[in-house]
Amino acid sequence: MPKVIVTTSWDDGHKLDLKLAELLRKYDLKGTFYVAPENREFKREDLLSDFQLRKLSQEFEIGAHTMTHPRLGKISAAKADKEIRESKEYLEKLLEKPVTSFCYPGGSYTFLNVQQVKKHGFTLARTIDRFSMNLSDTPLELPTSIHTYSHRSDAVKIARFANLDPEKTAIYYKHWEILGMAMFDKIKEEGGVFHVWGHSWEIEECQFWERLEKLFAHISGYGDVEYLTNGELV
Ligand SMILES: [Zn+2]
Image (cartoon, rainbow, N blue to C red; front, side, top):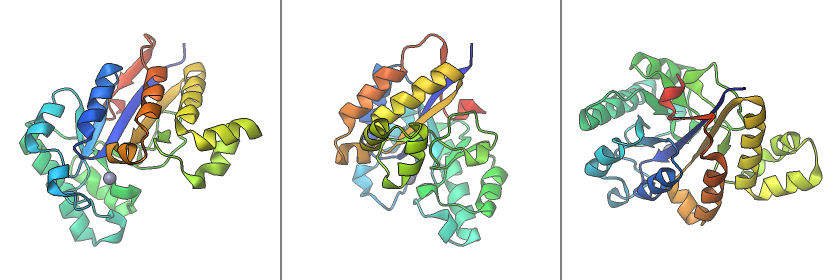
């Protein structure tokens, strides 16, 4: 039997993560929530409170996502180091447990940032790279399988995944959840890791909740599939 792993991750620490957690719970899926406690891209009242974070961490993994959500590859090394270190300290103090997974905001990072993440004790750091279907040998630059969003720039990769079948390509291009199901089916057959990630605020904005639930229903409930948090991958 090929080994099949399913993991999920959700970025930014928005209050709608609670709705996402509910859906994960419904389908018995594990997840990692990457939180930037002072995320400047949202109003304070739209972010999870400390109390909500503590509660969420009883059931799910909480990972660090810097303090204010800057693009690490575009700020000074000193500023990046501070953002990485402080987010770990803040969350560990709040949750009273080690925080070992990290996610680069906007997928922006340099080689130096990878070293900084390692130096501060993270054992895993997720990127926004897609179309990975195997266990990664670069845990500090962990790729994903699919983002819960349709990327125009993925057309070539989608066509390749669909073996250049024009009908399948068109459907996968329009419906990320159907692409996700097909990826999972391939992994289920051949072994590997299916990693779905997204943003609860984006799912709300794009009205993708039904699509997400369809994908969750499809990938859950298999006795021979290992359901893990991101941190449990390493
Ligand atoms: Zn983010």
